[in-house]
Image 1: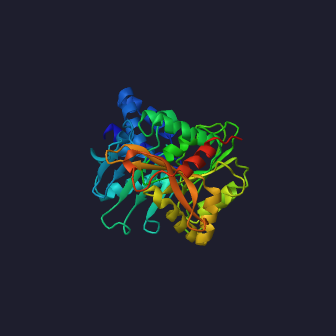
Image 2: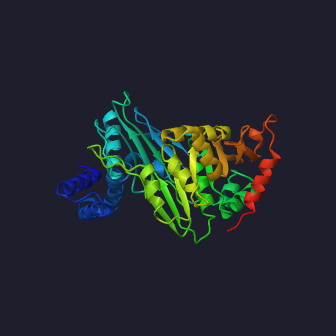
Image 3: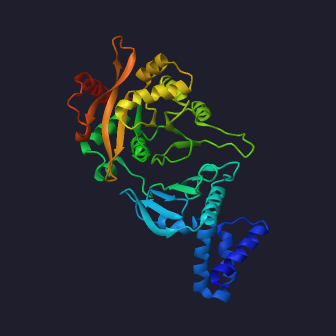
Length: 389
């Protein structure tokens, strides 16, 4: 029997006896086998089994790549990874359909979720902080698919984002003033555009005395600040009960004396609670929103408001009085993430009762001579930046 098989058999024996697969069990079993395997063999087997039982198995090596942000396993067992230049195929192969499914189910278990035909998809967070999504047949006919989102090992500041080329220094100074002036704002952009990264960097600029209450469906925000409270949603159990969504969590957060209320991603009926909160004295509140372009933001809020039973007029009224600025981020074709524009919410239409988004700064990438920067919007922006508590 190989050294890996010896330790693995002993570990699974411990699990069958009721001891959970934690690092202590693996270390104890490996130590007990030193006489047979030798010190080096036992240590090597312990590392291998830890990855297999406790970690991401064959994906562990990819997860340790520098700057890796996303790892995906397709139904054919091939592994793809993104280290800042888009998805690239790796040399790692998980195995056949059975191996892919087994890995997905074990990762789901580590995340405290169940994955089977009755619950054929899972969204959760592994103990390491990696965000997991897995989906199996019959929802995907070709086999199991696993997607992992890896949190940055380093929490990036605004200065770091400037160095990375996300924005010029002058823009960072304005955003810093926006946060310190307690301006209510949204960060919008497409999938993987850097919304959460930018939001976390901005919140790190908050006053140290602020109590930040962050609400997320799945925790991703990593905020460098002395007083942050995280609320995280919960999926329904196997009986289909016990679900706690963002809509409920936002209402709970409002009872926790937040100085800043943060919604990790506004994507449903919870927009009603967020807009209400931003209109009831919670200055400096913020969130992220999926929108592929800045001029889509208002329409996106309209659509989400409709999910929450809000009329078009109510959405515009709440947006006009509760949301003051929008930062639009974009992922370019070369994989780099950039802050594309910053805009302010302005009255729109003949009656001034609707809301519109007017850019005050934007990159050459989005410069459109037919839509010039409005001097009135620039004045509003300058007034917002001049605000202090």
